[in-house]
Image 1: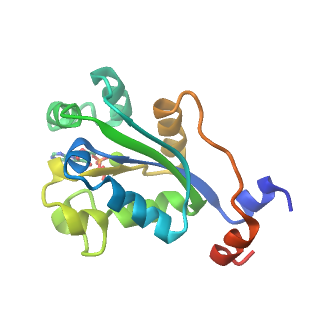
Image 2 (image 1 turned 90 degrees about the horizontal axis):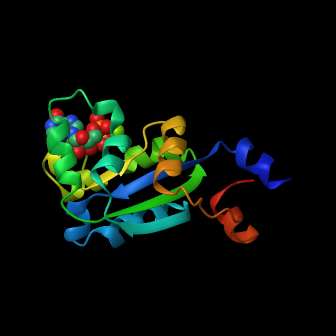
Amino acid sequence: VSSVSFFTSLNMERTYIMVKPDGVERGLVGEIIKRFENRGYQLLALQLLTPTKEHLEQHYADLKAKPFFPGLIQYMLSGPVVGMVWAGKDAVKTGRKMLGETNPLASAPGTIRGDYCIEVGRNICHGSDSVESAEKEIALWFPQGVADYQRNKSLTQLIYEN
Ligand code: IDP
Ligand code: MG
């Protein structure tokens, strides 16, 4: 079985997960990484950077017309962010479930937002909402490209049935 068919047959996806400035400042980077690692997802890229306003406006282009948009950009400019790419079966939808609801107060305990934050404008993390936007976001945040490697086969078999 080639890596391509393994990837597609198991609905393997890549998702862009980002710890927002409040999450970085509060020291929650490790906690968020740990949850994706523990779940069995594979880390393909990781970076801390201070994005420009233009970069953030592109990332959140779909929300440009929202009344909270200026506040959102200001919030996202308040410090460095940590961006990552995680890969695995159903990574986009499951990543969103692990994050919780957009509004932390609506997020179940056990989710990242449900365990670590309270307000929608301080919700500590971002996760891609579709495979298509994940690929767009990965290209935006990692223009240099991300890793493409296969994990140890026996490790893979401890996580996936085949
Ligand atoms: P998501 O992060 O769960 O995908 P989006 O609707 O894409 O939610 O909104 C992006 C970000 O904008 C949210 O994570 C949150 O930080 C912020 N945001 C969304 N809705 C509101 C709002 O009603 N007031 C303030 N900030 C908001
Ligand atoms: Mg979103």
